[in-house]
Length: 503
Image 1 (tube, rainbow, N blue to C red):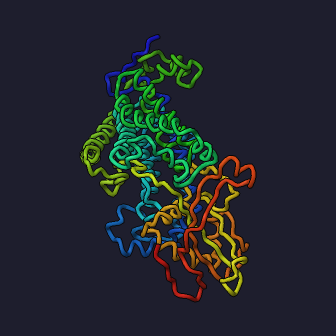
Image 2 (cartoon, rainbow, N blue to C red):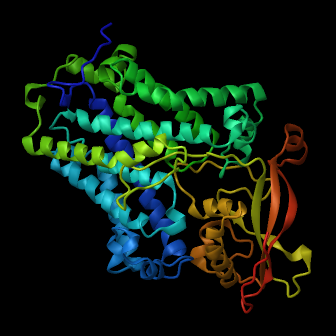
Image 3 (cartoon, helix red, strand yellow):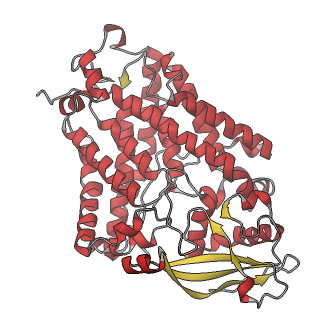
């Protein structure tokens, strides 16, 4: 078979990456749908006018340091709903391919709207939006704007920019592991990770139960894919396609084994920038890439699509120049012994540094929030547990699949259990909202044990969790075993001043 594929006619235009464009545009747009749905469902109780960390107060304190955002001039919950609604509608139009049918400037405008609206949200999101995959989605949306429409060929520079993004995600994650926790170097991190990760999925207990030698193989394979394979994304075809396939496979493994919002979904989509239609057609003739290659011969485009308009080519070159200029700091960061993880080097969240799990926790502690209707908080039998949607709670509750949806309150509870000081401010307010039986806050939970009635007291306890063994699951019908470690927040009433015990 003819496995050698050129990047494109005259190099500037890629002639064999039509499927890459379809997957990138529609897949990234689909994740923007998920992100804006989360904005509509979670932002107001967390960050709205009566939220746990209200945006108006944050903007007063931050001033210009907040970065570009529509909310700088005015924030209201009504405006937030408009932003989220417009984001969902524009993203859905891209998922079904409507803007892509027009001139190149139409999808460019659509992705620009998504990027700017979500940038406005992230820059006021504080700790609830302080995740590396927020910047990753923003950068992906920015690059997707320059993929053009069905009326123009795919620009090679944009595909290279996507590959550079995947390189920073994977290679950055690989380096932060090797420079961080020694368990990555002795191949033992997965003895713990499936049990202690922020939000386990339905299959995580089974991954944790795999034999330890297989866990070591997992870690070794991870090092190969993250430290070696990213360089091959820039190799000639078919090597680049096979490298992308390895990235996709490892990301799917992570999708099945845990809940990391859209990080893994987006990374595997981005890797498709290196996939050649011709190579895919040779391997899978029935695939969409195979169909496209059958209609147009290898290395060819219809005459009217052989080149793009001059203005579009100029815009692509300008984008490439911006990415190149902004790449100095993240490239230097990769080479630095004090490598930063998930760092943005500008307020536009473009060309940042990525990486995850430079250190692994060996034990899982969880904060369990409880309330009681009893007048006397010493009545232990009257306390009832608030159940969260994703984080571990009642021991009989099997971990659920939520990714690519992001449960921001549940992630905040994981960091709170680790002792993160940044989480304590909003947690104090969260307890007060529970005492008020605030409907918006209660909707963030899986179950309110009091069905909307105000509790008399609330408290927070810390438990040490581990997965139940197979015998314990069969005997006791539980997924977790937990032991109390202490009291984080003493019982309190709504008329008491907040007070918190250290430790």
